[in-house]
Image 1 (cartoon, rainbow, N blue to C red):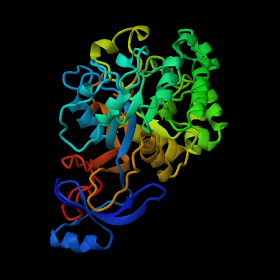
Image 2 (image 1 turned 90 degrees about the vertical axis):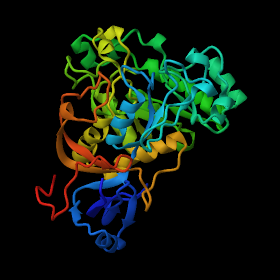
Image 3 (image 1 turned 60 degrees about the horizontal axis):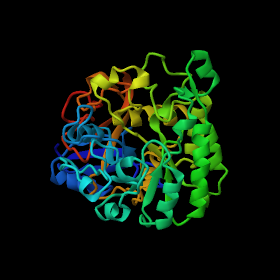
Image 4 (image 1 turned 180 degrees about the vertical axis):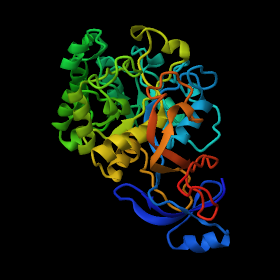
Length: 435
């Protein structure tokens, strides 16, 4: 990438701020070199022509609070290089990985990763129990000392006696504990959440009780141990949102919601489409409305990608035999921009609260801010059409629900990979100034 002078780009520099037009100078290494009045003089020294960036958004890179990568080195579904390439190109600067892996990340020597090619941050969640089995506690203090960002379990609530023991021992200190309110024993082997739409389609239903009962237990434990930082993963029902909304803000655990649950439901997804097999299961239209309202009101604090890649063989298995989950960081911002900013009239700052600042809070990180020297940024063109099928930065995973879609809105540049530039050209360079 060469240095670029972005003229009148909409700059969202941090939490609580609205985007404002200004000039920004991007250095050849991807760092922000200047903002505002000094850009013109700096650009003149470099003999740069301006890029008309009106209509583009420059904002902090997104944060994914939990995703999965089972085999970083040799994964057939996803490897570390493919995840890094696709997540960075999608505008993500941080992807926190859950402990589920071919070698479960439950001890200090299991918490390492191969070196990265970019500045992508990959914080690792440590494990609550040994091998994720829910029988014996893993060494919490040792994992945190080795760099784990916090502790997590799998897609279900761990046995409550084990969890209560962990909270009482308190080896995690003030590190976050990420748990999913889900009891598979109560799911009745349902395929989607119980609803009129599920009955009409003939799908076996999973009652909301499989989420609300363990959620009530987790809320009770959080009250007994207010000094612990309990976090909730993948809230999926209207009933769960109502339970959280009824709590005083000081008592309410920070909670995430999957992007796919915000985007689709059992009433609007094609029966033959990718994206039905999830845990927690896909909800009803009423569930999706409640999740959006909960996110808008702050009852839910963060949008997670929860990237769970499958290889081509796994993806071809019957739905009841394959692992539940969807993959694809590259779809999250374009799809939620269309659904929430364009259709629902959310302010841009509110979307960034859900995709960046809220996830940072859930992870216990300082909220990102853009300033001179920052490299963790993205440049987004809300009106740019693109084909997912022809995207050279696609993830390796076979279970991407929008892999053949024609989409509107694309990340056109990122600071963490200066070689990516899909934005406009300088005004005197000729060609179409918009692409």
